[in-house]
Image (tube, rainbow, N blue to C red):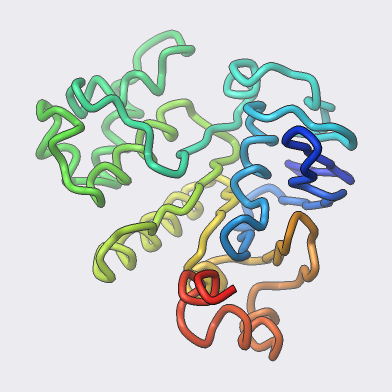
Length: 242
């Protein structure tokens, strides 16, 4: 497995955010993590990327234990995250935002920049525009593009469809599929369970810090409990009702 989260516990003070979760992501897969708000999805990604320390368990990446590795070294190792809320630099141009993704690399990035612009033609059109003046969908594209500039082996995506119009949601998911086809492994945290399960090879269901189901994504799409909890409307509506 490329990425292994083994019996990981994470606390915020005395509150247990993750309660011994185990997740595996194989080379070339898209794996989705679905669950309601507060289930621990974002905490899981922060733990993998080194932004949140674990209390117990371990994280292995590319055969190595990285549980105590600082976040910046995990980027160098090949883990990149496009965070919830996008986290772009609003006063910097689109192109400078993208180049910030390559801050730790040496050499010529023109080929990588060209590939990002091929994936996101809108960014190429607006390369000199300040990132903060773009629409939410364009900023999401910029956040993903910046993460790709690190040349990741695995791309962590946190709620890429949040706040986007349906047409843009479909576009973002199509681009994620293309990124995967080009060889990048993806771990996707997403409240739009229908789209996430249609896109993924495998998926995990996270509830109150625990993994309660894991299976091929196609099986979870047909699972009566998953359908009742997350696919009756969109997952955001299910989360608001709990």
